[in-house]
Image (cartoon, rainbow, N blue to C red; front, top):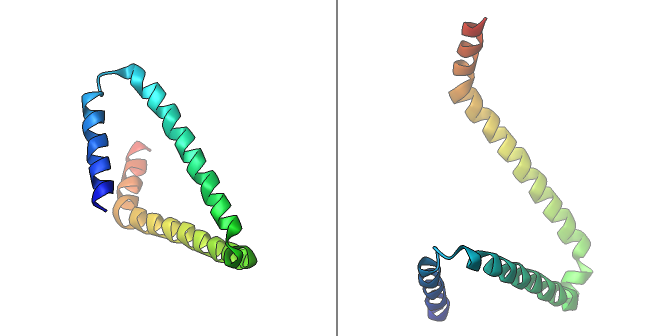
Length: 99
């Protein structure tokens, strides 16, 4: 765990020192994207090699869909509730004043 923190702090320090060098950002961005794609590829290989995951992929997919739909429905409901409680009266007043 300490190695991860040291690497992260080292990256923060180097990033702080190089923040004025705009040309470095383009190179680093490409490297980061390549590493992310490589990590996703290796993750896909490890999932494909796991027989438990492969044999239950349909159940995992259904659970993921239910969780996603629940999260979206909950977010929409919370946004609507916050809008109704805090902003609807102000919006109605502004619309009435414009007429």
